[in-house]
Image (cartoon, rainbow, N blue to C red; front, side, top):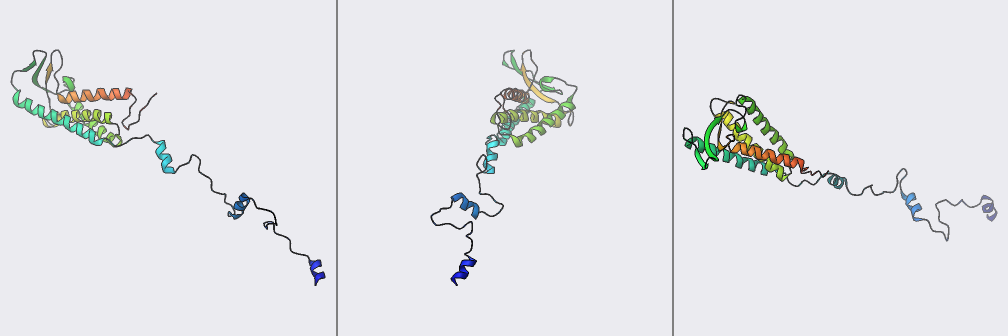
Length: 222
């Protein structure tokens, strides 16, 4: 029996078997435990979750300013509408009212042109322009995150809507109505509060653009 065992020999040791006095490397043990075709997990480049990465890529915007836009527009529109109602009731067919001597007076006129009585032969065109401005502002409001831009667009919106109301509802007809103007500085055109809101909003938009501010809250520093 002993001779047979000597001839047959003992089975070969497997490569993975540990020999007495030897210790396996930890990485070798991990490789052995990992399924075939896979590699140990490694941290993603850049770190963080996809949501955190997306948040880091985009500029901080804060809250939308739609409420501010429409609040400013509502105030500008209300002041313009109330002032025109009072002017028509108190000043039409009456002598001008002097506010600061001859330098500033209230004198009612009906203007079929644009702001400050310009372009009186193009009433319909100015009506279409005013309506287009309102539509553009409403579409832009969805991406409005800048507070200064909200004030500027609100003034522009309220002023355009105020004069558009006159174009639609005042004589001589729909889309041909004459705008009520009454603020008459010396050596200057007669205008109304809607014209003032439009001009102030336009100036503010120009200043914001030159200052590198976008409606979405982005600030360019170049």
